[in-house]
Length: 358
Image (cartoon, rainbow, N blue to C red; front, side, top):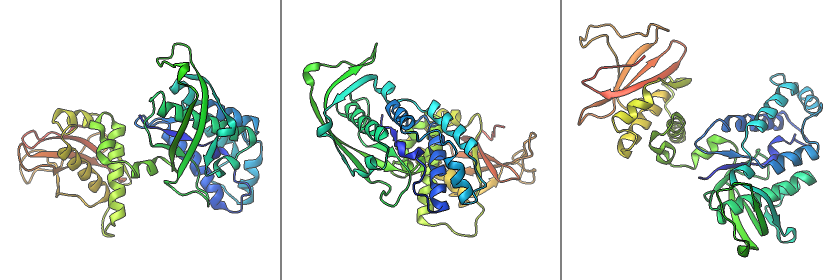
């Protein structure tokens, strides 16, 4: 699978820091990283070498430097102790690239290395810069030799004046030898080396930036997890926002899925039929945005038109239904809405079923 590789620049404090926007970008970069490591659909890695380089160059912990910047710009929405806790948590939780590739050591010809643009190395400390060079060599081995990483990996970094989203980071390096970890599933033939590698990574500024470049149905991945369903809907929301939205609408602030939602997708084949999957994804996205694809109707206690709308006993949420398909069995999408603007997609089902799960 393809992956996201973390740029150690994400944890470097802006230097010099001339505005509160720079500081906000730094904090937002950490938070984006923190969110991404909990997503299993597109794995996120940092190299252990880069983590060690950050400590050796004394970039982390912040040792009062962050507090100085927060005070300088009167930032009262964060403090150094909390951000240090966030940083320690994501460093502990982010899988190591070396472990994924099952590589214990790599030897490359430093004189042959060419990283372009070189600002990705020059803005780091000496040890961290060398570590990033090794990291890019590891990605190249994983992609070109071990084939354990698909091409077009993403390189997660912070926004700055000299870097744009979807820029490319190219790496040219001659790898002399690699040593696999004990019990590695891979096989290395020493006669294959040295190997000259040339590969690219695509710059991204957060998980949502990655979503923009991926196809909705690739993200859907046959609804293999709630995360896949979420990513596909979020991508569809992004597409609708790009087109433009009417102002006279009521958008939901949060959406969730009920315990039966994923199962109902699979029960009725919406996971595998691309036309039905895209229909469901678009219907959910449009309901969230307040521009439903089909009329949304009250889900009543029974079939009588004068029957009361069903409410959920636990929180008094209101029950709703809308058409997905009008042919075949006439599938519907059922969902709940709460008074504080949360929508919960409950299940899908045929018209004859008239069931909404709580």
